[in-house]
Length: 362
Image (cartoon, rainbow, N blue to C red; front, side):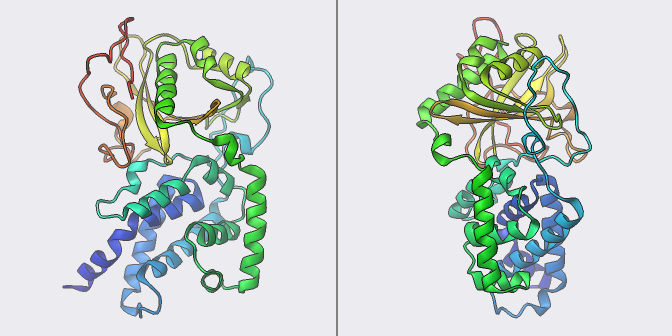
């Protein structure tokens, strides 16, 4: 076996979890992929000097963390609109774009699913990339993020974190306490985000998809909690409260039955929708990814990432919408075009509603 073959065989299985780690640090799947590439390049260059005093996994995480720390120093944090100011008070006010802001991006679950990856590692990664957590991490400094992720997510010992960051164990423990306290101030309470049972969750999401596809503002409003929030990066303007969110959705999202098609996907470890839009009789084109946060008392947050899959690296600009399919599980679907696990299947009996529009049946 050549050195190159040995390196690939020994390090390749860690790529998925390293990608999740870099995403947690930076809040961008695209940047995370670049930094994982940089991590592997640096590791390859120094592989002949790896002495095995730590595990190969630990060694790779050391490199990845340092790469991320350097990147954050250059690029800063990636917020959601709610991290930059309060909600708009007038639902009729013009929407303000902020294209110059490096926004937090969603993470396609398909990227967590290396074929040989340990299922336990996949579950840990998926829990650690929830949007609420990654958005909250953006409030922390680069070193605070590193300390919190290495200690609380990866469960490194304080001494190991101190060695990586070139500091003391006391400083690591102090930094961890501050990071936890700051995170507690911006993260929603867990009991407020308690999810309903699986059957109830899927039924609510099916109603959510139907309301949007049928442009039914009243049906959508019934699913929202009174304190619901709507964010639409790259728009700076965001809204809070059922009445305001329903009015904004009616004006800008629910513009006519059949204009939008919602296809179930998985993003950041939670159910989401790839949204396809068409104008009149034109084909459907990729438009956005909707990530609703579903609780036992209704939908508490909707983040509408405007066409996040259509980066210069993807071919989804002219990609037609797939037919409605089943809810994807982790890593299901073909992510080669855009990273999103879009389930493609034939239209099934019951997938066409009485009004002739096609639905999205979980």
